[in-house]
Length: 415
Image (tube, rainbow, N blue to C red; front, side, top):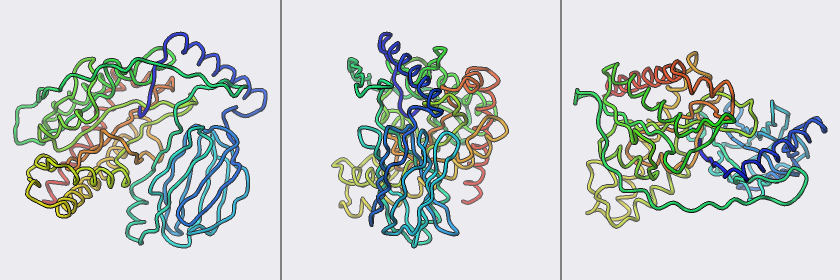
């Protein structure tokens, strides 16, 4: 799960009451009370601003070629006001779709969403647009979705007052130590499996009290066992017990071990209990650009790229080398994400558009293909039963093992 909290008992009770009131209001009005109607779509030369009459749950965008379009899916929203076109957008269409709405922007020239963010009230979404060439647009179409989540908030169903929750900030996690590597053949590539959350951070919690951190660890161990049994890879786990690791420590463990692939295991969660299916996240291009700039500005450049000492290079040369390496890494990550989604189909529930992109810190290793695998929804009763069962975890592990086998076989053949 990308973002999750566990509330103290009083706050959890308040949240349940609020959720019940929201459901009741939805039954009385014929629609969920959190469904914000689109009030205004303002298209400018380099951005689109969508305003709603109340908070929405989630948004994601992707591009489509032939003809060129940007599609925006909104969960917890309804079609609404007409909009004026502008910039690269020649026409705008809206329609209801499942538990939300889809907005399609027809393009006069290729353009992609480079970044998106909600305002603090969750009722305004801004999409930054960037005009690109045909090749970059085609690559964006193959990369999949970018997802945008509004700031976390619990609010009363019928008032403007919001609850705030204060929690103590835990002490910094202890320095990590390198984990055990499973599998005896040193010639095999190393895969590092990261079980998300842990320790004081439980991740999301199901209605029945199942914690994401516990499920993620069980799934990570099942993947380890399946990969080791296949003999195709060596495996290490960032954690094998209930402890918390900083996000950068998680991928730094993998880098120091010389991992060829990094997989972070999580469980998704949604406002509605009907959301189901696995998704695979890779790093967005905007986040990649920012991370490349940060790395190029570092004084100590000896450990940025494995096997390359940038300490003697100036910033321009370092920036070019980092960017080239990171582009190759992002392409490899995206290919593996699509491969994993394909192999998982038929074994576990998978979302139709399963490959998404986001600015996730745990994916920012510049020289190691990395994905975040949302194995299912902990907010969905059926998904939880699958995730929390031996058979369900075996199917998830089989999906990963098949994808890993094809991934490394393909890379070896290409060399």
